[in-house]
Image 1 (cartoon, rainbow over the protein chains, first blue to last red):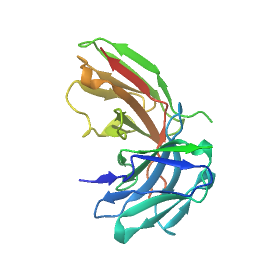
Image 2 (image 1 turned 30 degrees about the vertical axis):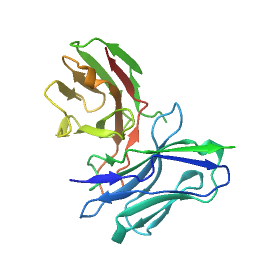
Image 3 (image 1 turned 180 degrees about the vertical axis):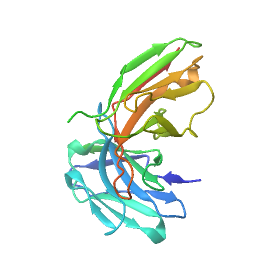
Image 4 (image 1 turned 90 degrees about the horizontal axis):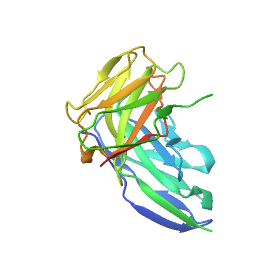
Length: 113
Length: 116
């Protein structure tokens, strides 16, 4: 069965620090990969996605993620975080379009100003 | 344009009662998904509709849970004989679906269900 692991449960950073959130998935075939973000009091929003092509994908608000197929990883990065990046981040995968997303447990990011 | 909407935003009920949760997807989206998110967990898949039919209901935990989408737009998730363990945030998502590289699911704000 597919599964997604997010290594960090809670990350605490100061503003301007660099961010990397780990995500590994378990599935042998072709996958679509996503990062969603949930800001306090708001609903899940898409941050970025990977379907095919360039394994380095750029999303909104300066976030990027790199798909490394050999490591089954899709880590999220941002070179310099802001206080407004405080949120919960979820990595998700599905096997193909039109199927259910499998989510990780999420990582809570707290950024202090 | 308008996003996915869900009503009610909060629902408190007593153990054993019946509840209905409504989802109104983005206009034109043919695919609709229901997920459940418990505290400290990521969303877990319940059921997926393509048009009016349930294409995959493998995530429904038991036969107390049922969902419909009679006209291919609004969907209702129905829970019979609610139990305290059903307490969670129920999320709905929709997408245009079909075609590799085109299926992105957009989520609604969720309904927080509390079973006392």
